[in-house]
Image (cartoon, rainbow, N blue to C red; front, side, top):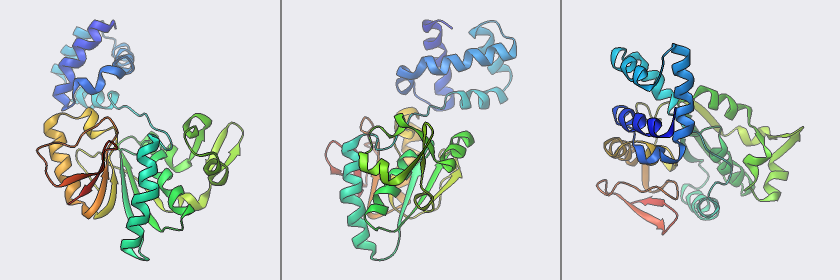
Length: 262
């Protein structure tokens, strides 16, 4: 599929899935390669034939929705934000909850990189926590439970974290068992299902507020708020923004997209 055809197709299809084109602009070729493979599997000759197939078969939209999933994650992604979460938010929450575990939800957890980042930080500070990590992609959840990563996934971790938290086996690094114990992985699509809460900290980074349309962003933002304790934290990606028409948060530290619930 040529790039102009890819752009035109995604600008037509994404809004029908409650997704937004600007979020996919930089990753469009990845998605369109998947669509190309799908068209070949169906024996369709060109994108117009696939559009006709979508219009004739509503079940194909479910397949296309799966093809639009983007998974880009790594440990300690966006160092400033995770430094704040690990060195400020976790100790503050620990002090407030006394000996009880901090409750954290990692939404769109991919292969567990961000959830495990917090688990490592808490373990180093003797802070008890329980993390629920959710994703709609079962393949990613299998990887998360196995907790085996390439060196590239760990490149932003402080070196002593990597040495203390992982065992190297061949070319892979395997997270130690005691660091996996406090993380539970569940298959959920945030558009339809969420863990009950309440949570002291929610990570919702580079999913809802990158790829979903404005209406869906508002709906999910409202539901995230109801699952966050007063004075708890919600962390977005550095290039994302909380919807202006959903009040109830203030930035915990400007520029990091880490918010505190009022």
